[in-house]
Amino acid sequence: MAADNETLSKRLAEVLQAQLAEVGIKAKIQLFDSASYVAMLKEGKQELFIRLYSWPNADILDWFLLSSQFPYPNHSRWRDETTDAMINAAATSPSWEERAEKYKEVQRYLIEQAVWCPVYIPSQITAVRKDVKNFKHHPWMIQYNDGIDIDL
Image (cartoon, helix red, strand yellow):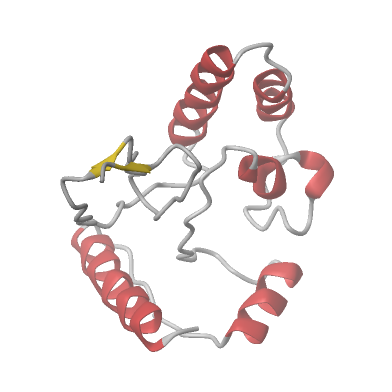
């Protein structure tokens, strides 16, 4: 794990630990190197964990939440027929618009069930020269595509 990510994760864990303490839940922070972290997730030893992702596609939900992916990479340890049906319906939707809406429904359902909690999306500032046209800013990762033009 890069030093910046380690510092960010530690700071985030400290904020969450303080918030949990306010409602009477005592949490101990443990930092793991990547290999130990993956081993812990595979064994299901975690009670609560923080993991940062910058995956730009909702298909990542298949990995972490489908019952067929249990016990790993479904390290949330969530097995639920409703979730399975919702993810499969979203993945097989005939249009991008329908697919996006169904994945939003999956996310709402997961949050209602307290399976996971999106904490934040870091702010990003992207500067583009005025002669760059058709640049599309992605909210959580730099994304390059063939649609960018430069006026000369």
